[in-house]
Length: 436
Image 1 (tube, rainbow, N blue to C red):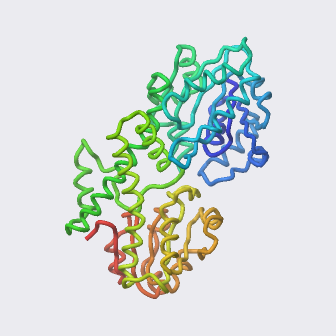
Image 2 (cartoon, rainbow, N blue to C red):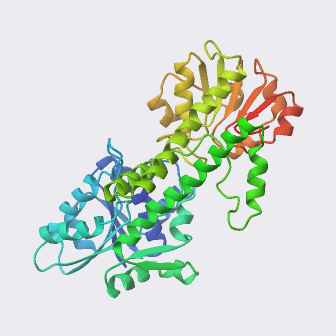
């Protein structure tokens, strides 16, 4: 098939590359000339494993092209994926200006029977309103249908999630649009990926509800960790017990500094705003509590660090391992780790950080931190070391070697994954949220 993908940011570029890798001819569009130029050269402007290799492969195969012309996009295909950003506004609602602008720019060039497929995260009702908006601006001869196919990409695993996801959700209003989506995803469907076919509003709801539920799990276990600290219990053993219960399970229940990134915080706040608009006060209250607990995790790490170094952070040197919001990514949007760094500096600490991929992005936001070339360099002369992003290489660090360069052997595991016995046997004082 011939497809267009409108938007060549994280979501759009990943989707365009993966659609080309499924065998389709893809024209990706973005109004940012730098994005288009770099992508056409085979460069990915962010870190995502496997994506750059797939981009170059499909450019070489001639299945992937780039443009900034909506006229060219309309000529190229009758199926258009909308993959532009929907960031949060100052009041927490979803900003739909980019998706509206893309629809307005595309509409005048549409001819014949057209399927516009939304992938972006939006509030319920957006698809229907967008359909009306496009029809009002398109030629009268155009027959416009809207579908919603929400993305469930995890940064660091986005290629796999796009090519072989856990499920597809098709929000459609006709058999034709459902059949078109099935044709687009024929290869992963043949491999057994399940499909939930539903209406537009349900498809739109699935994405924000899924992210809100995941965020609720993460915040709940962090609230339990705080209970453990006050009651003298061990949250890790609580999680072990949860994991044996088939109704609960143990996935995404490790306590730590909380979630961040460009999706979960925005989607929780956006869904809260939707719930308030709909008058569903209990849901809005739950989501507000989830957000508040998550933000408190960051200050709790700072509190623990302050306690470990003797009651005041002023004049103390701290090493932070990891500033990306999660491993496998260079994304520092709403990074819990970077927020902890900010709070440490505000209290007078000197902070050295290391991250395998995210230091360049972090330095743009916080140039005054010391960016170390290695974990060993970051640790040199410090009074406390904070493990805040769960990169595999940090699990493999040698506590004995690190202990030789620090001023004091204090380690705070903000992701609950390090081997406490290994660090303690090397003479470190080991600390974690909710741990005994």
